[in-house]
Amino acid sequence: MAPDADVGTGEAQQFLEQTLPEPVEPPQPSGSYHVDENVIIKFPEARTRVIHALNYGESLWGKTAKVIAQLPSGEIVNYFLKVVTLGDTGRAMCQGEYESLREIHKVSSDFVPEPYGWGSFAKAPETYFLLTQFRDVGEQPANPVRLANRLADLHQRSMSPFQKFGFHVATCHARITQAVDTWEESWFVPRLLLPLQEEGRYLKPCLIHGDCWDGNTAMDMRTGEAFVFDVCSFYGHNEYDTGNWRAPRHRLSNKAYIQNYKKNFPVSEPEEDWDDRNLLYSLTFNIGNTIYIPGSSQREVVYDDMITLCKKFCLDDFRAEMSRLESERLPPASLGAPEAQEEKQYEEEGDGEEEKEEEEEGEEEEEEEEEEEE
Image (cartoon, rainbow, N blue to C red; front, side, top):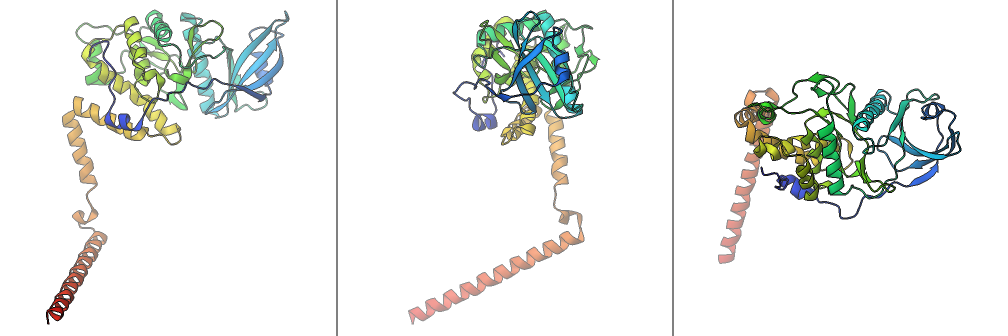
C-alpha cells in the first residue's frame, strides 16, 4: 500500500460508525477533593502544602483531581491526581502508567506530563493513585501536524534497553493487563508480521503510547504544543500506535493524522502489507471497546475484521475451522439422541396435523363453490 493511501474500513465499521463533528469536551473542575497523606509524600518538593483540591474531568475507572499546592518558596503549583479503586488491577494500572510516563519523559520531556509518583492510600490500602504534573488541556484531539510529528519523534529516538520487544513492568490497556513484562525477539503473527523481519530487514522496537486516541491527546493551552497522557507503553512496532486511528468513531481517523505521521516515519517494509497490519493492530482497541464501553457496536466490527484477515492470510485453516464449528452446531437429532428423536417426531406429527387441516379447509371451500353453482 502506498504511504499516502487512505486507511480502509470494513463494511460493518462503515455501517456502524461515524466521526463525531463536535470537539471533545475539555475536562472541568467541580467540587472539593480530599488529598490522602500518601499522595502528599509524593510531591516532588518537600514541605509542599495542599491549598485546595478539586474533582477534575471524568474517568471510567476511578477519580481524577486537580491539586493546587504551595511550595516552600511561596510559589503556587498544580498537580494532577488519578485515583483507582480496583485492588490489584488498580495497582497495575497506576504502576504501569507511571513507568510508561517515566520512559516517555526520558525521551521527550514535554510530550507527556512529568510523573512524580504512585502508591496506595494511607487510609485505604486497596486504593491506588498516580501523581503527575498538571497540564492545561486545550483542543482535543491534538493538531494532526504537531501530534504526528511528536509521536514519530518519540518512536524514532526511543531505544529499547535490550534491543528487544517488551517492557520492564506490565501495563494496562483500560483494565486489561497487557502481558508485555518480558523481553522478546519478536511477538509476531507469522504470515502478516514476520515479513517485517525477513529478507535482511531489521525492525526497531519503539517506545509506543499504547492507547493513542482522541481523548488521550491534546494541545497544551500554555505552550501550544501537542502532548499525550493515559499511556500504557511498551517497546513494539511503531505502527501499533496508529491502529486506533482506523476507527471512524475517532477524530484521529481524519486522514491528515496518518498522512502526516507517514511523512515523519516511513511505512515499514513490506509496504503493501501496511493496511492489513493496521487492521490487525486495530483489533486490540476495538475488543477493549466491546468489553468496557456500554452500548458498544464493536463486536460486529471485530468479527468482520477477523474474518477479513483470516480469509486473506490463512484461508485453508479458516475454512477447516469453520467446517469444524459448523459440524459441532448440527442438531442433536443427527446424533440419534432420544430427546432429539422425540422432538423430530413431534415436529413431524405437527406437520401432519397442519396438512390434514389444510385438506379439510380445501374440501370445505369446494363444497361452498358447488352450493353457489346450484
